[in-house]
Every structure is written in structure tokens, then in C-alpha cells.
Length: 238
Image (tube, rainbow, N blue to C red):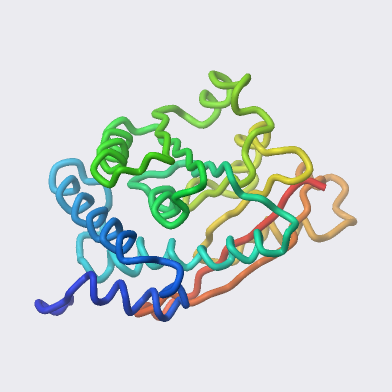
């Protein structure tokens, strides 16, 4: 049970320090994160955006879970192999990780797709109130999104990321036409290991429909204040 004296902002700052993000996230961004949490709680009373209502669990299961991927994304860019300027969050739900990415990377273009109207209405209001001018929200099913915006978004995204959207095979199938050829990256956030990635490492599985995928990195990390492991898988087309 959450302590009645729990202070979200103080705990958030502590979590950022544990993730070594204290020099990356400034005071203005911390306030944006706190205000995002406040909006989530306010809207959740009416629209049931998330089943998690406890503030500590909101911090650990949503905010810190998503903030933990910031350093791996930075490391990808710092390797000089990738430029992650246009990022698509598929099945964004209540904005995880899309809104978190928009706050942390204000110079990047963040696109969020979700098929539920009330969630998109919430996301649009978040962008207005937090002044997230780098973010676009689309209320569409994923296959419809790429069909309806074929000219603009085919071969467009540097990074397509999913968190609890679908199994990774379906994730790739539904979004592959949007990934930038040769340099685009898929990122799958998972709570548990997924056999899909290990199967794709086996070059002898010629019948695998995703055999042209190159699974190149698995990062396992711990979430501050939560005794659970998380993973993010990075992969692209060969």
C-alpha cells in the first residue's frame, strides 16, 4: 500500500538519479512529467485509461518503466550508426512511452497511434497542456494508418516502438512499410523474454517469415523501486 506521505515528484527525481538521467532531464521536463501524471489521474477517474491508480505504481509501472529506455536510445544514437529523429509509438494507450519520449526528446518528432478515441482525446489534451509541439496524435487502427497516409509515412520512421501492443511478429507485419529502409529500427519493450527474437537469430530457420529481420540487441534492466526485470529488443531489416 502506498504511503500517505508519498511525494511523486521527489520519488521521480530519485528514480531519475537511479537511471543516471539526472543530468539529462531538466527541471522543466520534471514538471512536465509531474503534470502528465496529474492529468492521467484526473482523466482516469472518468475514462479508465489505466487500471493502475496507486501513485507509486503509476511511477514504477508507467513512468520509470518508460524512462528506463531513454539511455539505450541515446546509446544507439551515440554509436553514430542511427539517427532517431522521427519516432512512432504504436498502440500508445495513455501515452506510454510516446508522451514520455516527447518530453525527454523535445527536438525529435514523436507520432502516437491508438485505436481508442477517448485515449487519443486524452493524449491531445496532454500535448496542449504540456505544450508538446513535437507530437502528433492519430486516432486510427495501425493498418489503416499506413494505408491512409501511405504517401507521407511509407519508408519514413527512424524508430518504431511498441509497449504491450502485440506480439513482435504482428508488430513488425503491421508497421514494416513505415520503417526507413536500411537504417530504421524496431524496438519492442517486453516484461518477459520473447521467443520470437531468439528464433530469428537461428539462420537455419529458412521457413521463418521474418528471417530478413536482424535482431541485434537485447537490453535487460531493472526499474527503480520495483523488483522486476524489463527488456527492450532492437532489430531491423538486413
